[in-house]
Amino acid sequence: MTFTEKEIEKQMKANHCTRDEALEILQWDYEIDHGNTENGALTKEQKALVRKITKADRNPAEKRSVKRERKVNENKKALIEKIASALAETENLSVKTETEISFTYNGKQYTVKLTEHREKKAEK
Image (cartoon, rainbow, N blue to C red; front, side, top):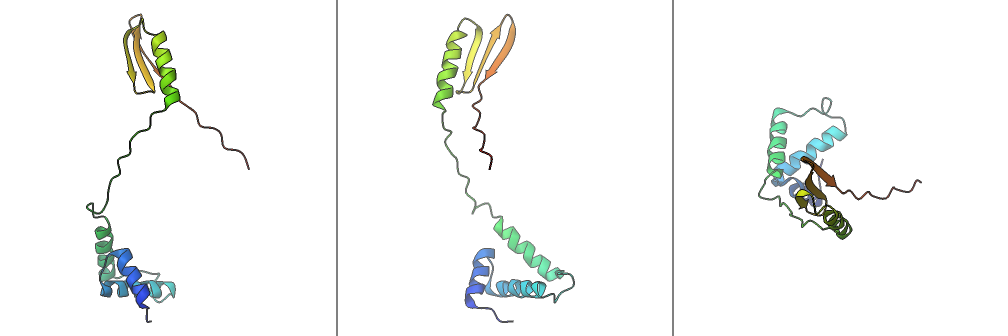
């Protein structure tokens, strides 16, 4: 089976492999698709090449972790501030971001956590 240059280049880019390896992959795919192998089983050499290619895909240098800035929910912040001012006379009052208040009342510790619920999806 002959493959086009476009198919070969696509395999090379997708699997970060050489031209020969890309041709082998295309050939395996063709054989598996057309039932020319035993239950689509790969040989030892083919398995080794697949491991090499998948290991190359896991290169941590290529992966970039995106750090996103957390958005402050202004509605929750305003509500937490009102609750905190109402609890001002309690001991050990602490506000954690705009979501949580911890305090001590009559010697016992409490935590109030504010959750904004999402709207329910409309039924189809």
